[in-house]
Image (tube, rainbow, N blue to C red; front, side, top):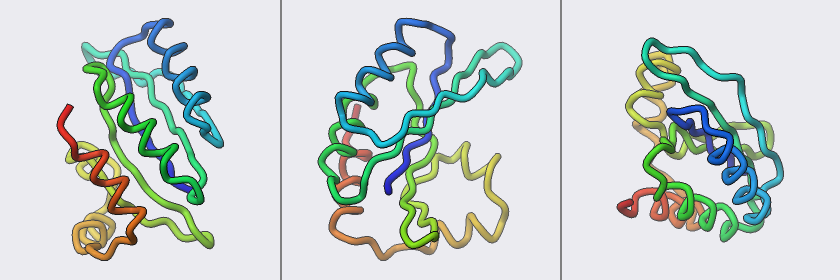
Length: 128
């Protein structure tokens, strides 16, 4: 399973409905919207959307759609298989605030990716 975590830097019901709609249209397995995070001068809403690892196209389609929205910031992308988590992407902010030193080192040294993982990373790295 591929999971994408991202946040929206404003509380806006229209954006929330749009994210849910795009998630459903993309064939996500799960949609989670976390409580708002209160950071001084910001109101953030976090999401975690998961896709089956058997249909990478759905995950790529979703990434391609959301990354063009200026208020959406992708924090992490990881794959779960056989109860093991493999971090494919972590934003600098995510690394700084959510990963310990060993986890950051492991993530930064992880350079072996499958073809599907490379396709997803390419979709993520294509400019907005």
